[in-house]
Image (cartoon, rainbow, N blue to C red):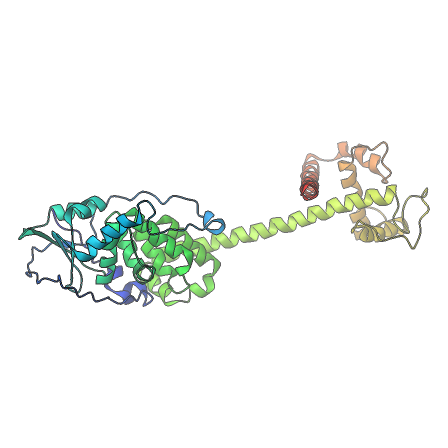
Length: 407
């Protein structure tokens, strides 16, 4: 069985794959345990396996990050003394029977049983590696020595330094996916989600998230692209992605168009709701004027005062002008005068909403009730839709008022 290979395009060339934004320097790790390996074509190299078992999905909802950010400690499952003991075993390398060779030729001593238990993929590679003088030798290439060191250390004790995670987070994400270490994968994803993403690197991280089977991280990247598409589309990472992966660019552009369409539809619905709410307020103001009177306008059986206090109905002022015009207009037929036509429509809308036409004081209320049966089916459907929208706006206002008073 051939050994897996970590030499992938997005790791072997920073410029070609990440547009220069993925710039992580190789950390030199010289140790006393470094041994000289026989350069041999049969030397096992641990790189991206072709058939990596899929790690379990990341638990938790995306929106929970805002309300309750997840805090991932190194590990709270075991006592500190236990973690320190395993961490010390890794650093000392006592009794090591595995030598992990890194990209720069350095060697990290490790223990075969522990690596096999911590990573089934790595255990499979070790099982098929050759044993020389009682030591199994493998190579993890394609990532810096420092990233491999942090990765092996995590397998021992789940311990890590925040600075190491910041420096090698993308490499560690690849390693955790390649060797099926979901706990480290969650640490990397959490770190990226908690603020490491920027306009310059989001495209690179998106591609890496797709390669590493991190759908939630990919969704975070896509949402960031939608929020700041103008600046992200002008970055070097986007230009490189356009050349190397035009299908992804097309997919992102479709997302942007779809998001813009949804935004326009949402704004349109908001404007429609405002119109229906205004109509609801106009209906209330119309009943108020015809039943109680308002300042200088109202029913003939009410004594009005010019210095009356300000009205609580904002629509009264506009309706007062319409009513005054309607009472004195010489045309007054529907369609003959724009202002009169609007007044006719308001009166008819009130009639369709009014539930007590026999006692209602709004003019022509009963007249329009009788006229309803003479309308065409098409006009009747239009009026029913309008009435339902206005009633929905009324119910929404009443619900909001009741909740506000209860609070």
